[in-house]
Image 1 (cartoon, rainbow, N blue to C red):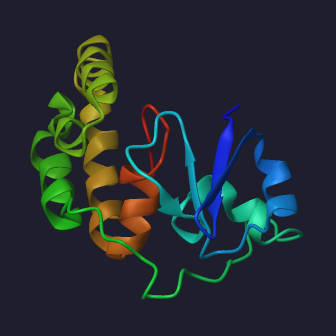
Image 2: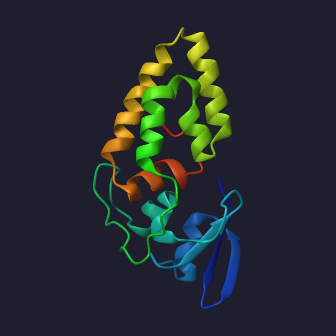
Length: 151
């Protein structure tokens, strides 16, 4: 569980758990941060806050996307990552490209222990990456705090 900080009108508040962010005026445009994040981001770009921003939506319902003016591309190319996953996925190269070193090492180990079967899973992941929008890709694979994001 992360301890969150919010920046409203130049004033920083925190640490607090994510359920307390609403009391400090959390909106999709609010800037938030927790340890492990490279920089402050707008809440609409943080996948972990979707349930707080849009309460009552199930995981199967679509939540409104971030307005385009608030989305900040990560600079990591989804097509490049997808192709790396398709052709070199068993070696975890796409994870190294995304800065997920632990996931890259785990992928190598799992591929070895499964005699290469895990490379098929990474091939499928590469196809999934190629079918996403850049924003979906950034939310799922780049901006997430997940050690090893899959599908």
